[in-house]
Image 1 (spheres, rainbow, N blue to C red):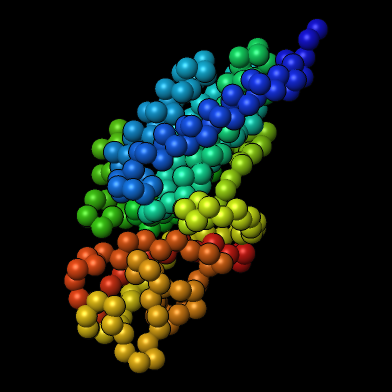
Image 2 (cartoon, rainbow, N blue to C red):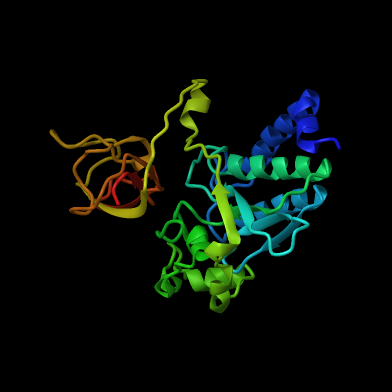
Length: 301
């Protein structure tokens, strides 16, 4: 009997076409953005909806099952013939920070989708299900609480999060309802440990800078903790671009360099961070106080 996986691995042209399709789809999803000329796709927004719909269409084209859970996570499935089989989960996240790299998170979802499509097309079946997940929220950009999608799946959702609000005053509960989710049913997203075989994620922590510069870089950092932080940046009035003698320099776009003074006292600063929009027009004078969101990742518990 022919081994379908061995056959696939020997079809180099087919695999090359699959790789090209992944890259093309990364470009396609990068175009679903709320920021012209940059990638920004936050949780439970119209852009998030369009992204889920696009990936769902690709799942259908591949002959795979698909559904969206009550937290807005997108799921695909390649079913086993064995009843009661556990599931191996592949995937990553589909949300982004402001001005994100187009492969951060998205690549892991599309690699998993393409692998499942190839296996399904070859007729491969396993003694376990293969599930694909596109988590709706990892970055915490909109509501200031990170990993909401995976926390729902892990069964660690805190009902207090429903009251979190974005900068427009929309609460998380209202955003879920507008997205077609039922906040009261968020517990249904949880997956029991005994029904899971494992979780595999291919992930690139990547911003747009290196790509724009044509640079090839690589850096791997293991981190165990992720927090969405909010800083109050208290400065001084003055014309835009002006700073008093001895004042800490500002990073482009209102971002603070790591280690600069300012921010909430005692707030942890990660090994890397994504600065969000400063909320101030560049045409305005430098303001005395503004809020800066940041995403901190670091190895502490």
